[in-house]
Each structure stands twice: as C-alpha cells, then as structure tokens.
Image (cartoon, rainbow, N blue to C red; front, side, top):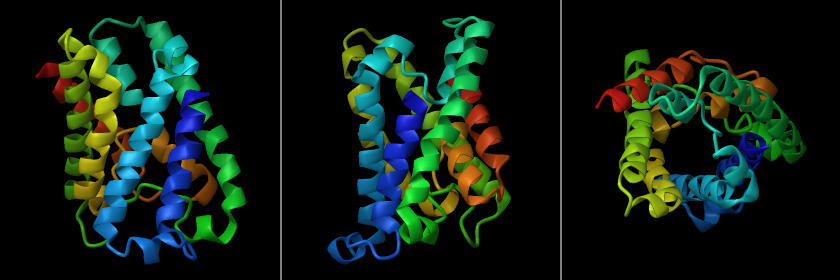
Length: 211
C-alpha cells in the first residue's frame, strides 16, 4: 500500500508539473524550479507515508535500496526483507495503473518514467543514480544514527529530493528506488536503461552502508 500510494501520488505530481496541457508550464516556466518543486512534493508524499498508520505499521519500507540497507545492518532478517521487496514490486504496479486515467497529459510524459537523459553516457547516468542513492541512504543513516536527529528524519526527505531532483533529473530522472522505476515502465513500456535503476541504487546503498 505504501509503495502504491508513493507512486500514484508522486507520479501524479510529475505528470501535472510536466505533462502537455498542464498550466504549470505557464505558472512556473523555469524547468529547474518545476524540478525542485516536484522533488520537494514527491518527498512530501514519502514523509506523509512515513508518519501515517501504514508507515508506522510497516516501517515505511517503500524503497528497495532502504530495505537493503536495513538488511545489511541486520535490522531485518532475510525473509522479511524479501517480503518487503515483493510487496514493493506489487505496490509499484498497482499504484501506477490508475495513472492511465491521466490520459493524454500522462502519455505526453510516458507517465513519468526514469530513463537516461538525452546526450548523457550510460556511465554518467549510472554514476548519477549511485550518487543520489548514496545521498539518500547516507542521510538516513546519519539521521537515524543520532538520537537528537532521529525525530527529524521524515522531514529531511522533501528537502533532500528537492536538491537531488534539481541537480540530477535531466541526467537520470532521479530514481533512487527500483520500484519507482519499474512502476511507470510497466504501463508505458519505457524500459530504456532499466538495469541502471537497479544497479545504481543498490551500488549507492552498499557504498553508503560501508561508509
């Protein structure tokens, strides 16, 4: 449920911000400002989920990279971690199906997939996903690791995503979450460079955990 709501809410924001016919292009003509706003609001969806009953019940495991980090820190057993991964994949698919109702506006941006930016090499895109996921998992480790910062953890996410989406969206789409990539790919058929959005976040997580 958490992953489904994250993708439905977050990608609805992406479609509204960048879809053809949306008034946002006129209201916010700067692409960078729209990217920053989109990242912040997408992060807000994650924050609200974390604070909700769903988040408190499940630990808000709506990102496979975060689940991997908790498993590596031995905060989750293997069976539970695999259960989360399966749930994230199912949730990603279920959450994206209603996006088809966005019609031509949604189709104009392929329902918000993460694909390599035009003109960027595969290596650059991959490094982008490694760096952004490192920032996410590293920040979570920092905030959770210090008692005084721990209550602020959910509120850090919108500001983090506002920054990384602004800096990296044109390069890699800023996934940091394999489920966030696979959901819109299922309904749009946009699978270009799909493996990057599995390898990049997992590598970024491993590096962050090691650090």
